[in-house]
Structures are given as C-alpha cells and as structure tokens.
Length: 274
Ligand code: PLP
Image (cartoon, rainbow, N blue to C red; front, side, top):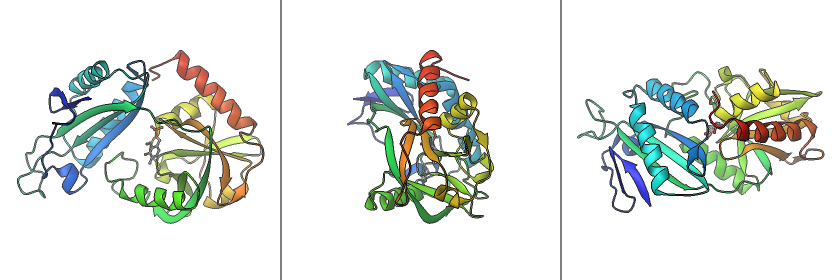
C-alpha cells in the first residue's frame, strides 16, 4: 500500500512520523474521512473546507489544499479500491521538545483502504458523558478522539454499535462518529451545530435533501421519537432499531426510508455536492 507523507508517495510500511510529532504527543491534529468510489472522493471540496476550518480552530497553519488534493489523487491512483475510505491526517508536526509546536512544519498523511461495510440498521445507547458545546474543540474534527473511543467501547459492551452524547445542558448532540436525526409527529429534526455536534457533511446534505429541521432537542426525546437515524460518511443514512433497550417500530420507518432513498439518489447524481 502506498500512502502520502510529507510531499510524496511512500510505501506505507517504511513511512515514518517522528515520535515527537504533536499529533502523537498531544493529539494536536485534525483529520477527515471520505468515502471513495472507483478512485473518486465524494464531496471532496466540503471535506477540504472542513479540514481547513478544523485546522484554524486548533491554531494549526492552514493546510495547502493544492497539496492535499494532489495527495488524494496520487493515493487513489496508486491504490485502486472500488469502495474506499480515504483518510487525511494533518498534525502540528515535529517539535524538538514534544510540547511546544513553535515553528514546526505540519505533518500531512493521506491513506486509503477498503471501506468497511455498514449494516443498514443498528442499535444505539446513550452514555453518561457529555459533549461540551462551549469547549475549545466543539465542532472541530480533531485527532483527540479518546472520548469517542471510550463511549464507543461502552456501546459495544452493551450490544450496540454507536453511542449518543448529550451536551452540558441536557440536549441531544451526536454520536461518536455520526450525527443523529429523530422523527417526531411526522417531522424530521436534528440538533443544531450550537449543540456542539460536528458539522457532518452527510448531516448537511441530509438536511438539505430531506428538509429536516435543526432543533434544540432534550436528550429524552429519544424515549418518544417515532424514528431515529444516524448519518456519517461511512454510513450514509443508517436506521436505528433500538435506543437504550427501547425497540423502535418497523425499521426503517417511513421518514428514514425516504431519507435513505433520497440520499442514495442524490449522492449518485451529484458526486461532489457543494
Ligand atoms: N460526528 C462525529 C463526532 C464524527 O466523527 C463524524 C464523522 O466521523 C460525524 C459526526 C459525521 O460526519 P460526516 O457525515 O462528515 O462523516
């Protein structure tokens, strides 16, 4: 497998990043995951915009998007996979002391692998830990993913495949790697970005394509929602069958099924939607 590291394609096995890279020592980095079909990356421009916004939020130098585009193209050409998961990682880079980023040059890594297959339906649990909607990292796709790893492990231990967070004021926020939508009395809703959730690219497209409303929702909305679904790059729209042990009715319900249909149709027609 070939990956892109600091300006060139290299064999993944021999590629090395310093043990003092900020991405490793303090999780000072940002990333994007894109899905690819036959060597083309879906919604690449949106992902690059978000990469830039996340880098800005962390105070990293702005990524050189021409280089990132070149890197993506080179990696996709060198590693043909029909359905891929492309990962862009951009970190604070090497610091001689490992603590102060100083003038360090950022590290850019781009790699692609086969996309894991996600089932159309899944069970979720809520977790007691909260997203901090006013925290410095709110809404940034940073490599500091420890909180998500812990929550996902809890979900798996409880027989679910995703964990949902509330925020510090008791509102529904998002999953560890997904945004969440609920249907209430025939209307789709999703938490607004002010809830602290990531500005998911699938979420934005689902809002645009289904007319879902961005609404502050209490976490306990999950106890009465008629339907629940998740969105993310590797899921598209994924119907939720069970929340904290509460079985939802026929899954996917009508609004979820329609969201799945519209998403598949529109995404196929417009591969790089703005
Ligand atoms: N929320 C979090 C915390 C995520 O990590 C992700 C994606 O990995 C999402 C939401 C969904 O975002 P997207 O649709 O851009 O993949």
